[in-house]
Image (cartoon, rainbow, N blue to C red):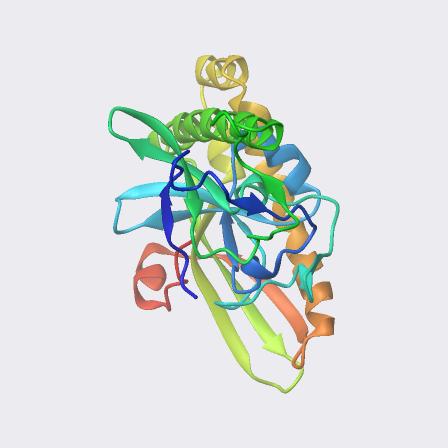
Length: 257
């Protein structure tokens, strides 16, 4: 059933209960997940972080790669997550925080499979947020604040022209090959050539550490190769390279998050 986020309403959803478990089956087809700056350091130790240029919104985003193919999440075995860290944008489900008029509001997926008679109630009999919902609201507020800081970070990186397209060339066990493109990462040479005052500005804003976290996370592409061993057609080899502008325009575009 398709995801359908609607504003959380204490009248409409007063009797709703949500199961608290470690199932991530809803993310089985998620190969890219939005990442926020406050979790970069943790995520970078487990999975690659890359930038994508969303042609629809005309904005860049930072995402974590959960798989090499569209609809493939290599971090899932059945419903269980393989790895110590899960992106906040996965953990928030079945809730989300979105603009609601002039402020942010809490939304819920009405079609979620996590609705259960044995789950945690969202509201008390008096119509107030339950302890469970209050904790989720705090988590969503932290997520929203981190996303706003991430937007400022991305805007600064783009302003300083630190991004270059990258390409991943994969060879699978059955001999087939594929180029994964449409992604960008930090160009270390451009970073090192920045004037000292701009480096200091990045440092004071807390962005310099985030930049290095993104750069170091690229090494986790090997982790995706390792995880592919549990698939029907494992990745035999991988090659990462920079892409020239003309090559980027002619290559296959990776799907956006």
